[in-house]
Image (tube, rainbow, N blue to C red; front, side):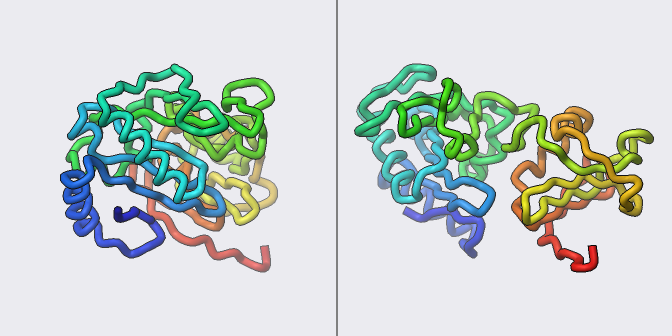
Length: 256
């Protein structure tokens, strides 16, 4: 089946054609997105809603081959007329660990199900997230879940008001013009070292730069959630709040 990879040059129209063919032949298409230095890998189904009247399935943070296999295995369970339900533990999908399915918040559909949205011509369809346990068989919401895996599985049933993968109290750079004068954030930079900068259109100086919690910025302007997946070394710019973000690779100034 044809994977969708935002770093390759798959023609969108060809992808939709192939997806339709695979849905007719296999009952679904598995879309695979490879990981980057910042974003985890993930895979999701397209066609289960159309063919089985069942929510689509998405899973994060595993190898692309395993993601592909797991989505297909789950699809076979669904095709056998078993309805997968949320918040129930399934011990037999993986050999040595448990999984649960979470209902994807509709506000998170647009961030991950691009091909499904194009095929269905709507984002109004249900989806379940398959969540796996760590090496100690702990789920991400359980105590002592391994920190190494904490950000490999964004939990899509929650946090729609705060989509960033980092902690809400992450120290982030902005300007006094935003804090004291209420000027809008028009440029966001995600540095190679992971720092976030939320900037107005004012000149940046040491004197007017301040540090605030990431959540403080997002609560003040929910449209900042639109660039939660900005990669390391990328920036996004707009002319006003509500404008479309334009993303570019950030060019560092060696003199800064």
